Every structure is written in structure tokens, then in C-alpha cells.
Length: 86
Image (cartoon, rainbow, N blue to C red; front, side, top):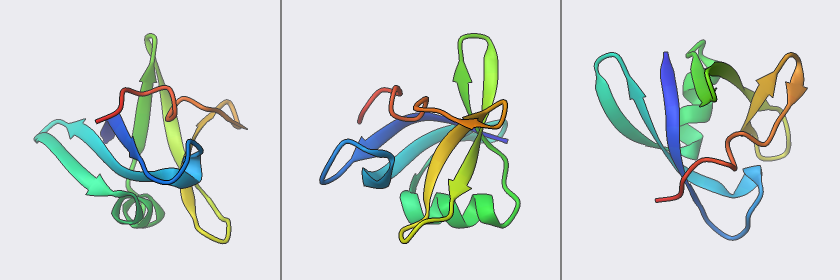
């Protein structure tokens, strides 16, 4: 399980503009391009965002340019956009 901790935006301020993400997991920390993390989640990877004391799962939105979006209780949220920038 990877917890996304920071994002980098390029060319705008929407989910589609996330270009890189930093994350942590049991084995350490890492950084991925948006496309790499989309593929990882599509292949069955479990990415999450911690909101208060709750984990919110990250899903891939199937669009012209697939992108990541947090999904709490079946509802897409803006939790990724609320993360710190790097």
C-alpha cells in the first residue's frame, strides 16, 4: 500500500494536471510520474491518501487522459489536490 503524501502540478490546478507524486510505503519513500502511478494502480496497486484518521483509496478515472482521484465511499473527492506541493 502506498500513501500519496505530496503532488506536483503542471499547466493547471486540476487532477488532470498532476505531473508527479511522492509517496511512502512500508519499505520506504518514493516518487513517481503521474503516468507511472496510474499504471501501477491499474495493475492492482493500492494507493491511498490519509485524511484525518481515515484512509481514502485512490482510483483511476478513465478519461481521455486517465488520471488519479481519491474516492471515499464511492464518491470522487479532491483529497489529492489538498496535499502539499513539491
